[in-house]
Image (tube, rainbow, N blue to C red; front, side, top):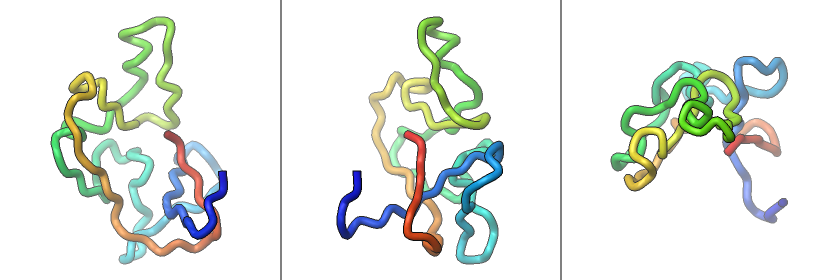
Length: 107
């Protein structure tokens, strides 16, 4: 869906992918937007929802054989995995310059 006037500025590209543009922080370092550093580096978390994140591996499949997380890479954010979803909060990336007229992300 294209929304006029809306520019999405997140491009989460797994290190396993060979294509895509990895956003860089204002200091020039590649941002950990895909959580593959195994922590929330380059993100600011508020509330309790993101405590103990990110999740490593497919914990969904471990608790339910009929389901998969379908995450990309090794790490992902899984609210149910730590607290069965009740906590709330926000997760905001470090600022970066948008260099292309498009972005992609996996939810």
